[in-house]
Image 1 (cartoon, rainbow, N blue to C red):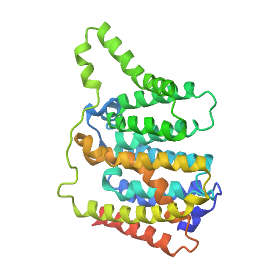
Image 2: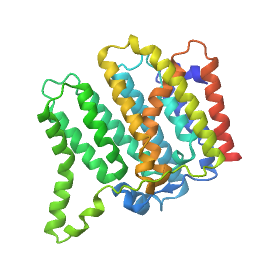
Image 3: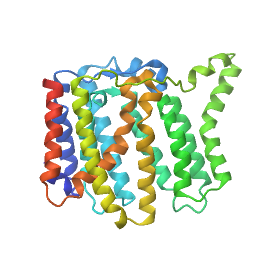
Image 4: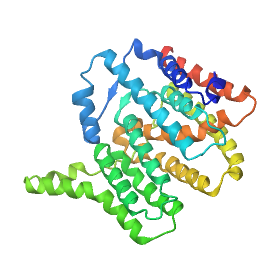
Length: 323
């Protein structure tokens, strides 16, 4: 199966659709759950009031559209910025596999949808490298982050990511950081102004991210443990091959991977910091995980290990939904 996605032919888009249907086979008998907590942000409000009432077929189609569009978008991102030695559809392949592997990512949730915002922010970040006058791009990026937090509060974890990423990609310049912070704050400034003018200023605190420190993995079920073990093994294999490739990358690409590594590390803490959303908030991890795990499928010349990782993941997926 893995060899099909090592080709950069556009027919792989059809294979991705087939893969998504196969690994999410259970949705045809049990339509994807719509999981949302209205206090998470505007995305959750939309899910509860406009998505959850949809019929089963509409939910199935919507779920596949979300997963496929994000998988293809992340593949384009990595190809556009030349972050792999060879262009393939394996990052998209990895992304789809991850959404089926971990039970909390196999639902329609605000966390899953928020991955589209994460990918958009990464695109803006990577474009900063060769900008001679980056302030407009930095302000727009800050604006996207601010709006994204209003849509889904756990994305607030990306604020330190964006700040440190700008320091990684560009030389430190205080005015650029201030412009970025202005962009992040601006949506909240307009929101507060609106609430103040409508005599609702006391409700402003409801729109601020709510921190709730708690371990989300207390007494995990067997399917969660199996999924975490498989993801952990895939990530270790991905890191191993990523380290081997580092010396072949130009400085620009190394900085991009440094940003993704930062996103991965901080995103690990998101389910702990925003524990009210439980492990559904961890869906933002899928984007950086797919990028690094892809090395375990793209780099080895022999397909024994990639195929072993793939079929092990398939076995866990089948167990999760039939066991």
